[in-house]
Image: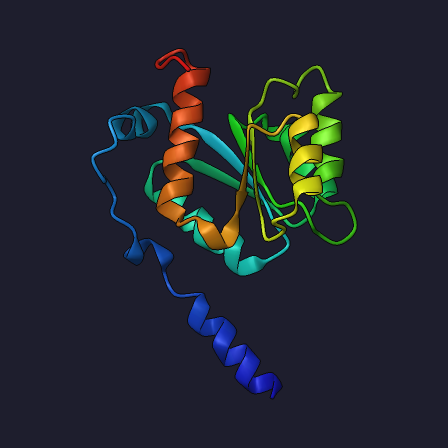
Length: 164
């Protein structure tokens, strides 16, 4: 059984960038290539980290990864990403811990955060929004392309290239 799980995990570790269109006509795509935005992805699921790392690297981002809120906070303090994509439910310290600490840190509080979670729960959504997340998205309802487009929109607004 363990061998089968290992093989399945290896199957998921294929090069995810093979499944993404490098330029889907998004006008902000070329700006991202030139600007080299930094994104921090925080999730306890390795396959999610790998999938989004491949997608954002193919879009020209510098990608940092963390597997829980505590690691994510340490990486955010060190790297000062342009945007953070985080899960909520993680072992040790989850996304709420990360959001609360980002909101209370003067050096990090202006970094936009997008929450991408399996938890389609109204209480989680409300708490995440109260703690400063811009979008609360449910993993099963979004394609990586959709997440990348939302990320591009948020960055365009942050850089003053686009208005709300």
